[in-house]
Image (cartoon, rainbow over all chains, first blue to last red):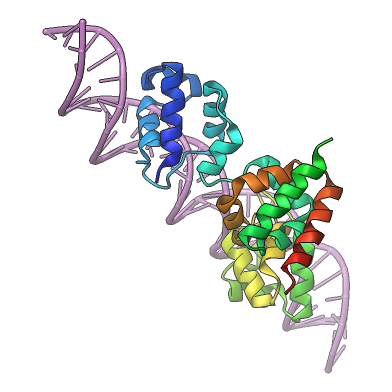
Length: 112
Length: 112
DNA sequence: GCAGTGTTGCCTTTTACCTGCAACAATCGT
DNA sequence: ACGATTGTTGCAGGTAAAAGGCAACACTGC
């Protein structure tokens, strides 16, 4: 567990930032960042969506990947769901194998 | 706009409830319910997830449909996304037509 | 031994979600 | 015509969860 925090820590170290260096860059206190990385938030296991956004930005991480790790739905996916809800209600009821197959099909179809 | 509130209103009328009758059944004040139906909440355009749940329950509505109308992602869909995130990231990038085709395919495959 | 780093407990602020009333207009049965 | 019921709206809050801040602590490592 806490795959999210560990990912943040890796990204931060890859940039050579300390907690105290990174914190002001993303607009929070360094102590809060420590808790984020260790999954020791007073509550929940991940920070706000907006902080995740700034972290992805500053650390050159994949924002959607980070959001998913944090148990949040990225806007790119949410938009699609609200655009074609019935499609996703159907897909949510498939078994894993079918869903994987369908995605393969889609990425193929999509290729120009 | 406010398709959600109108749906609630229809469901309520179908049951023959007045605002003052329904409100205590779902545990809120009648004035708040009126604002919900008219999309005139002090903030946001939809009530809490838990109120939506109780409304669906009391009015025999489709909870997931209501959640989607209210701009929220139902648990059934969210679970699937976190289970196979890459699949959904792919699907989010298809065009509408492809996505519709893929869903048709899936519902067919799924049919026993 | 102090300079930089990370950790932790407690505190405050903000946000989301409602409460509760009061006052008003529209409708409707009797 | 009358009261009763229904819905609308404004406002003035209240509460609990979510998000984050501060200060003191402990380790490292030259």
